[in-house]
Length: 122
Image (cartoon, rainbow, N blue to C red; front, top):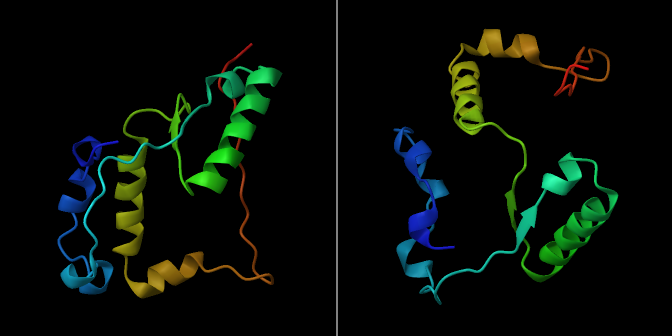
């Protein structure tokens, strides 16, 4: 993976990134070239293929043990989902504190959540 393959456009829209999120220049080590990330293909898992699911699980384990990270392809996330998630979280964190506190949850005040993962109507 080349640094030119990384999309930094989301960071460009963030005007006030605190300085503590930047690594000091004098502590940076020179790059040793491109990082060859393990690529995990999730299409078999999403299609219910047991052998492909086992292969993907093994690949994730190996990638975590050898690299500590990996790239997932064919994951089923629609294009633009990350940007929409960032937009929505920015709206939430831009709310006044008293509004954000309405979402605060504790064991005594649990969140009530509902979801489904239906992708096809049969």
